[in-house]
Length: 273
Image 1 (tube, rainbow, N blue to C red):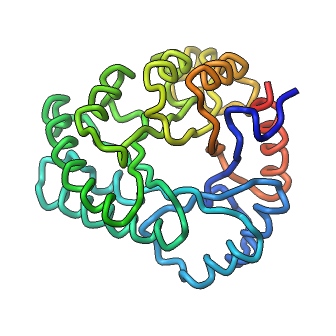
Image 2: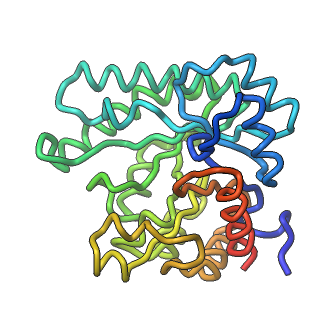
C-alpha cells in the first residue's frame, strides 16, 4: 500500500476550468478542498481579482502549484507573424508574474504549433528563439517554464523534447508531461524514462485506443479515468524509476460537484497502483 508521501504522484490538483458550477471564487476553492485535492491550476494571464484568489487559497489551504499559459493557442510562439510571437512573449511574461503572485512554481507552455502556415523546421527555430527570450524573465520572476506535449504536430519524440530542453542548460526550463496525450503516438513509460528528471509536472488524462480506431482520434478522450488504455501501474513504476514524487493534475472534462467527486475517487485509485 502506497502512501501520499511515497507514491510518485504525491500531490493532486485539477484545473480551475473544470469546475462547472456557478460559484464565487471563495466557494470554488472550498469545493476543491472538500473534494480532497491539494491544489488547483489557473489559466494566466487572467482577469480574476488577485485579492479574492489569494483569500480563497489562504482560507482553504488549497495550493496553486502552477498556471497554464492562456495565450499559447491564440498567439502561438511559432506563428509566422513576428507581432503574434511578440504577443505570446508579452502574455507569457504577464502570466509568470501572476503565477508568482499566486505562490505558484511553474507555468505550462505549449512551445509551438506545426500547421499549413508553419513548417516543422520553422517551428523549432521560432520555439527556440521564443523560449530564449522568456527564460531571462523566468529567472528574474522566479518561475519555471514547463513545456507540454499536446496535439500540435511538434516535438513528437521524447528524445527530441529532451534535446530541446538540454540545449538551454537552464534549470528554469523543463517538461509538463501529459500522460494521456501521448498514447495516440507513443508509450507514456518511454516518454517518462527518456525525459527523466526534466519532468516538472504531470497531467493525468485517460485515452482509449479502441475508441480512437473506431471513431476517430478525438473520441479517444471520451472515456473515464481508469477505463482506457493507459497502464497506470506501469506509469507509476516508470515515475518511481526516475525518482519523480510531486504534483499530478487531473485534466478531464469538467462538471459539477458529483462529477468531480467521482473523478477524484478514480484519480486516487489509479495513482495508488
